[in-house]
Length: 157
Image (cartoon, rainbow, N blue to C red; front, side, top):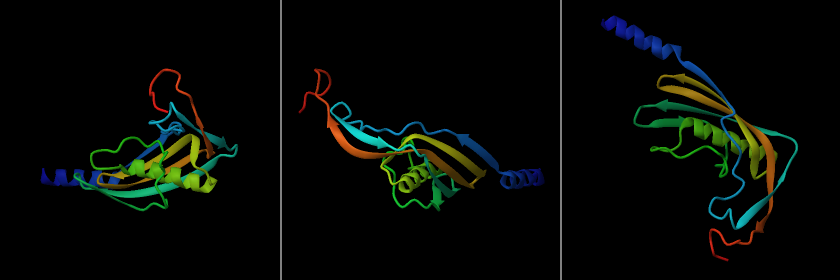
């Protein structure tokens, strides 16, 4: 029985899994949530698509996940990567954010409109790698527009 359990453990570690997820992004939020009824941001959207890639490796110990790798030089504020979990970002969220930031850097823009993500995850039980490619159209912030309050929502000026 002990040999069977040992063989099953080795097989589980050696096999691994590969997952492909496509289009798991959605559109970038082009209006801040707090002031979206009062201030609208004006963007100039480019016609040539931009692409950015990122790879994050990780070691999952159950209570904490150690992550390393990545080439992004900054954190993308407008990347639609979801909420932070109990112990911070997941490797997939960090790879998505890095790819988004690299795409913004490549396109010399502030945000990506119509963002699409291709995610490839190589999972070997406790360790693995997440590779992400983000693509979309570059949007540059050119100004803001103040919207008058029409009797609903906030009464501030």
